[in-house]
Length: 598
Image (cartoon, rainbow, N blue to C red):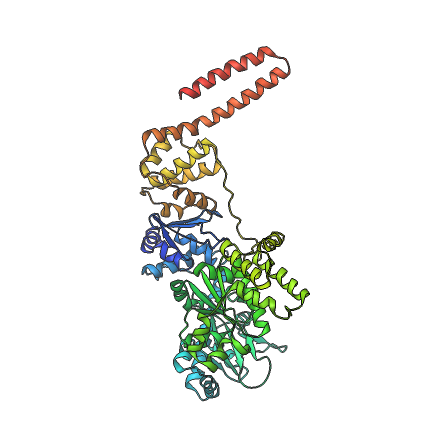
């Protein structure tokens, strides 16, 4: 057995998957011409600048510069090593890698092993708890409770709900019997170490809701206490495999429906999701009882254009809905808000009023601005001048944040009509109501996301080098011509490095294939290669165009020398050394003749 995947197997994996399908699981893509475009998952943006080429099997973001092939996309988006990306793509391609010892080892090998063991332990306990709930007397009381609240056997099975028994060491004994290190299981959040050194179960006498990551792996639990006591709900702590702020409950199953509808229903808790799904709403996800994070908002925007928020109908719920709506709007989502009556949450409303009424409430969700204006009215007596003016100022502040001129005008006229105000006066006031500057976006580790690239005009020689490299990636013959005429004399260091990789790629006998080439490039060159491979250049370059590009590249150092001569001449004239200045001028004339004739 080998520790490395052979080159031909990697090539078979790469050819066996479609990068559009791979990236399409993470990014909402729309076809435009020969390529697909969507919102970049590596930096926040509202206008799609992320391009995927099915022809070349590569991706590139014209905003932040990220680029590569299917392997590098998975490595970047999931933060996994190459071997793990290869295993996932091999599974999609139907290629068996069991003949190779693939443990993903490297600098992070031990951490990968620990994470794998943690996931396996969670999966084992999920099945154990579900079995206890559905098939044993110990779980009967919990099963009765779930069925009384209206959840069917099919729903309980679908969500793999379980029951943790009211004993201190049920999980300890099971995990120990399967040789899971108890120290690691404490780190995974499944056990707690007592002062006397004993390990006990974290979850006892609780209805267990498994939490999955976006790949469908079980990475945590939420346990609801059966009976009286505190805390009513207990969640897994933050662990190497479970970071609550980066996950959305049920997203691993709802993703397909969300993408198909281009809409997501966002609720707050597990019970809300489960009841909504049982009621026929399968495009629902939850933030698991915490405020919506930037990463969760980014995930939703990648997959849907519209997000309908349906939080608890009480004051705290509407405040949380406002905050979530602001996050989603910042990422370019169209936001609607469904406010349920009588302070009910979605789970309670469905049980009280039924699935049909719930569907009606969701369909009647209000646009975000209408929700905000209703919210701003609360606690104000609009018959009083002070409250009325305060409401108008607050409403104008929110209207000023709208990006759509039509929507902005609609609400301005609504305000003018309601309070018999001049529309011009409102617009004058609006111009003074500047929205707050958005906070800089950060990633999961709190670091700033990749900034968008600034576009600038490039000098002729640099454009020539970029065109040569773009054609070289598409044509073996062009690459050999450039290798003979230019070799390593590219003027920009990054271009010289990429050219060297291209020469070597063809010398190994490969045909033109940008995706295969990218597998061999270091990260700093992948960005350049992916950008160049998507340049809009003709498939066949003429001899004249090729010669012209080569001339620009080779002449650039001579133009630099000419500029140096110009400076030397100016310096000689400043010193009144006119003989030297005349000699330099003569040299410059000869150099210009040579450049014009080359």
